[in-house]
Image 1 (spheres, each protein chain N blue to C red):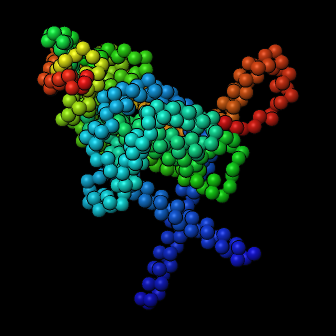
Image 2: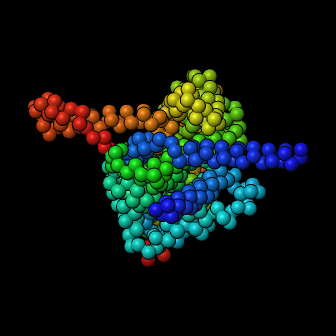
Image 3: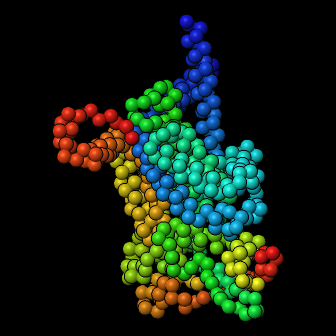
Length: 334
Length: 183
């Protein structure tokens, strides 16, 4: 009897483990991920191009020895052990310009899907270099970009959706998408839980504290003081949304409402505080949660618009004739 | 033929095992990085730290937490010219954002806060830059100027206004002699 129970228990355990292994494999390696990653690659590439171009304007001030943080002082901001990208600054002459130009060019090639994996890897190294060279400027956007670039290095979604559908390609794409999803969820849950330590969040005053901070707020928000209930509700809604994002975003009926709230929240932060790159970076990461068919629809629509604009520019009057002759032959390539 | 297939399958299994191990390692890293001080994080630190720190994955994810950013704070500095007079006072970053791209002002705000918190932030980092920027300066005196964020009820009642500078604290930081820096 005892042996029978033992054997049954072992069988159940083996079955459970197999089921877990299958589910693990399905979750991490079998998700349909390519359209979302292609869309994300384009969005992130465009955003990073703007971001790194902006950085070019302040390279001397923040990343050269004539600026506010000479290289030998970087160690004052903490242990530089394991900061390998920082070593490059000592080896390359005029490293700030080398990193700056590489980052702008690589974000362009990433945007257009030219050697996307190599572009993402170059961007990652340049990004690490900048972050480690001047840790004073590292804030939310810099932190999330590192994770997003890792996803693109793993997947390397190609120029066309029709290319490279091999065994490893589809599995790595799925892995990249899932890592992106998990990362976004992890960011929100920790950020939400960390807020629970703050008395201002408990008192419902945090949104006011941001809007009334004359150094952080981009515009005059004094008028919002006449809507205290809205400010208090907005504070609690942010808190609840961040903490429950990880639980709700996977459930089909909740996915898009949860993402919509996030879009509004980040749009609000972007406008109020003037943090467009951080806001856009977080909103673009929601592409990881969009259904593959919806991402594909966006790509196809985008491609059609681009083709239409291109035809209008290059062919003008002959546009109609061309449309008739090439209808439904658009390759899906972004 | 069969042997080749078996070999191929084994190779694939090997790759999968390797990939899954890396995945578990990465997941452990991103889950434990924000909890760095707990026992598990401390025990696994020697394994995870090189990976997380070198790739900049060690983040505590606390946007606007535990409370939203510190109140407005600026570096103020006075420049002493060759005739020994304190001639000009500057603020960094400028109180009014002079840039079209706000990000540039945000970087300056972040940098100024870090520099003020560093023991040698003025003498070794910001100071030499300011001396080089003002070639006629012999000395530079640094202050931190902080303001408060007015309470909601005060603004609602018309007693205060964001950025009205009714409460300002000016704290002396240090004085730097520029001579050696100009050479």
